[in-house]
Length: 540
Image 1 (cartoon, rainbow, N blue to C red):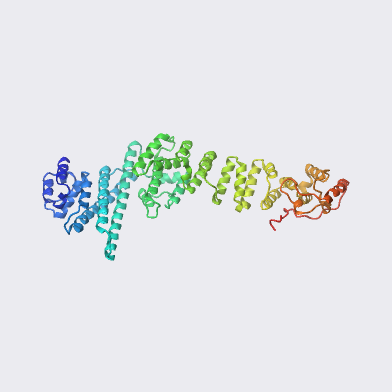
Image 2 (image 1 turned 120 degrees about the horizontal axis):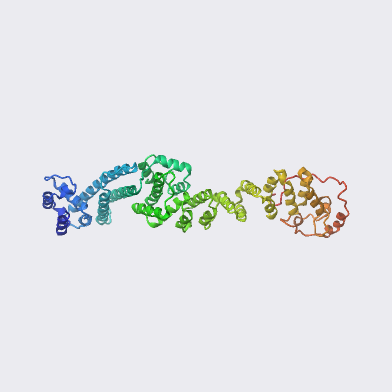
């Protein structure tokens, strides 16, 4: 059927549009307009005849001839004004009509209906119209040249803006038809439509943290709860405030996978990874997304729902290219699915920050990386008043508090927090005294031993205190009741861990006095010492 049309355009080229009368009459008599679905009368005016011939060329995929007509350099004075403007008006009318058709078709498909027209034919027309609009843009640039008159410059800018708007509308319409075509193809395999109620139940069961992070990074309104209709979803994604059309299409790809999952049977097993990849690639092609987007979105979706998690993590490599908020959402989701090793695999190359410390502490503890948790806490000490007691409580729950309290060297800012935590429970008072003994802070240790009833009745600890007082080594620190004669310099008064302060000859001489003391005899009560940690010079 198209052979006469092709022969005619091959013979005459774009001159047919300049003088359309003869060709219009031949095509009308041959029924070409009727077969192409073009509604035109035999006695139509010259402008309508040209538009009918443009319709025929577009219908048969001859947009290159229309573009040549737009770009042709004709010496007639009226050519620049009449010919391209006429083509622009014709193209704008087609773009507007196809946009309305795409909206109606997509609305039917979202509810599980069938389109009333051939979506493939509309997509071919849109590709031709894009070619024509590009040619119109190029012709405008050629005709404008260096503009010196302000009024002409303003008109040129207005014309550019109009063509850009037409191109944006055309692109959005193309996406709608492409997505609609994907829905038609997928419905042939398994029923798929937009089910807002099903998506709401799905999001309520498991909060879509990854999707929320993607929307936030793309500056798109949150999709939980999901929009009430498919078209509302479309309008929420493709907004002027969105980061880019490509990112909005990537979110639509994620929602396409959600639509498939919400329409599946409640107890159906997850699809094999190969089937999910094939479905994702088809939708990515429909939305003009490359393979990187396809792999990344599928990986994010699988990790969100713990489906093929190990394989999905490989789809996100390298993970450091993901937005930081998306990585944090992935860590949160994988911890919820009890996959801490996989979460660390994705996060390990990303530097920590204050806003991520709480989540990363949970990650380290889930992996039983206690040293990493303490390093992280000390690297970001701003909120230690809340975090350090939580970490100590984790040690209590895991029966490791004693080892770590005595092993770690506590800074002057950490010690009051540890002191308060241990003092809050009678069962930890003995450990509190041992902590100060290990730090060679004998004043505080003896004061606590006399002030806390739970320690006074602790036979083993009292024996340790006596043994400390009776130590025969000349380098040992003296008990409280003879400390007045000993070295009280700053170097001797405080050392984190084992005692390493300098000794004086006076200290050695007084050691003999300590040996002669009978600790079983009643002694003068020691001076009252606060049960709080001794303030260090750094805090004063």
